[in-house]
Length: 179
Image 1: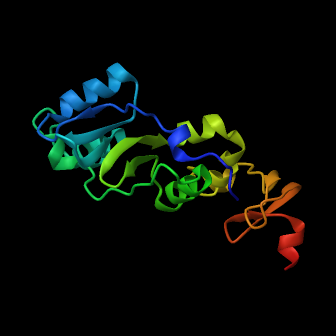
Image 2: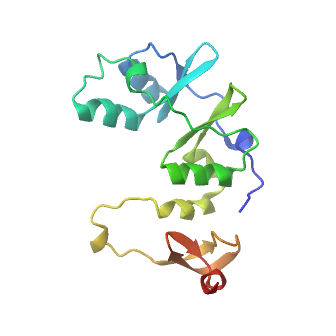
């Protein structure tokens, strides 16, 4: 399902960035100051990586490292998944969902154009939220009253339906379920 909205129109055009030799502490301070969950790591014009709040928690703190003593380059994500400025936000969201990531650098060739976040997409197209729900991990899921039927957009045909069912982790309408 295409939305007709491209990443260039939805992205944060001026993301926060730091160099790879900065400390993790400085990066965390910039995240707090700018109220962001990720910082693009650049050396000059070259993108080196991305550092997220989750990286700090999972790659440093949870492993007993002292983030006050670590450089960004030691824990940043270096294998970046990117999108082009012309990518439809639906395709970008599917990539985020499938790879379980929340931030996508938007690049044109090797030039950073901006940073696309889940919040950017969902603020513009909130109905796309349903596409993410299946990836959420809930603690004690078996005791929670989860809704199994929803209204929304069928992930197969792209048509609106008042009754979607989950089949193989995909929300589909009755017509597609019959096929």
